[in-house]
Length: 384
Ligand code: ADP
Ligand code: MG
Image (cartoon, rainbow, N blue to C red):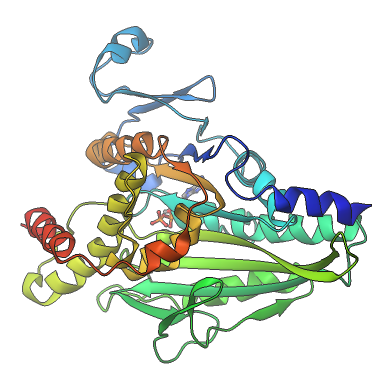
């Protein structure tokens, strides 16, 4: 009986009956830090009714009506989390439903986006005491599998990878860079570790260790580089009987992505040395923005090929996939500009509709040289 239910849900496909399901966009405000307070920062963000975000700099409390009329001061999202929200609040509102869908053979992805220090890694990975979305999702997955006595049928594999400086690395087994290849399931990183997970207990340690394998700056060796993107992929494989009683395999894939810092070109002293690196990381984010824009505008050609990140995330963006975006922001007025940028970008992301389409046709499109040239120009402007 369960198999029939799964079968039905899976055959519905990614887009749903309306031809496209909307991307869900959330905002999470983190608490003000000691460092910010010591620097004399004031809080410039207010979350109202669990949805509305107001940038209150230069406005008095309860000036919401006026802020609503100002451009770029008021935003509304599917849900907005105040700084008192727990990891569980964030998980259950943003990701729990995706986990359910993935168990039925669909794909889902969750992105954390925002400036460095805004709380992306805290939201995604969290700490031992307060595990984040990655860990809570896997925990929930195992408990759902157990509850329904699916056990034995469902096989869970984890892979954790990094995109840094347009290089893809295996975070579970550091070594040589991985090459991206296209196969029947889409674009895959050849040789990537597929870790078979049996329980939640081992996962937190595994992910913490993986996170330590992320690229760090030579100058600040304990801190993950703000230019590093981390992608956790959870694949759930199971079999069902089809209408003629044949056993068929299904795979649902959940991608959880801790994006690089979204701030504009980083102000570094070693400018010449780093400019290429900086440009490359921006290249991935910029390519992500271009894809989002193209999706929003309903373009036929989505420039996935412009970066490693967008190649890897192709089926997490435009394919048959449920997508969740969590924009992380700091409350500090010293980060006003970054926060406004993040919110603006998140606001735009609300307009994407994911739909099924002929993935094959898209893949065979050559890289457009004008696209690349345009991208470069934008980058140069940004890095000036
Ligand atoms: P990012 O990954 O976006 O650069 P982090 O997740 O590392 O930022 O967060 C920066 C700092 O703020 C870390 O010390 C983190 O523990 C803390 N922090 C972030 N979000 C929260 C939160 N919601 N509650 C408590 N501390 C947080
Ligand atoms: Mg981080």
